Image (cartoon, rainbow, N blue to C red):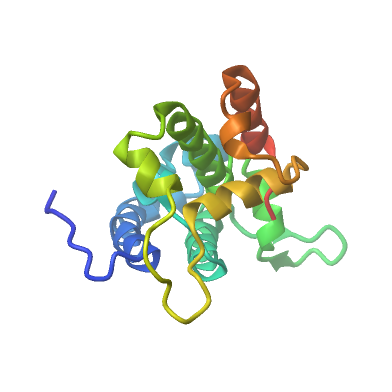
Length: 196
């Protein structure tokens, strides 16, 4: 695989680069996903695109714009997985709504996977200690003056938002992650959490 070069080192660029092999993978199995003789269970097993797109997602700091791009990609693939549905009242065929895809697709969606991987990685970072480079980069406070503008959304901010969504409040995630059993239970809860 050729090396990836990032010009501005932004998450937008990383997601754009990850979606290219995801699209290539999608187009290679597109005919199988729309083949009517295959059952839904087999089509879901063929759906190998998710790991291709989400490679390295535990370090992403997503904004609403990137979340939307990932959601659009996933919905496009799920439309191929699940054919149109016949309306019981009128008898007409109609396309499924996005919410219906998530009801039919029993596996975790993009955001459940991203959040659980991010929390799992956060647990590893919390146990590394303050001297390790990864800890300093992800949690440390940079020196110097900030530029005049709204600060960028940081990786640590995502961890705090993920914990707030699970009604953990304003806990210090570094202290909470020290209890490995409790933290792994938290990661498992995120995998089963319904993400709109």
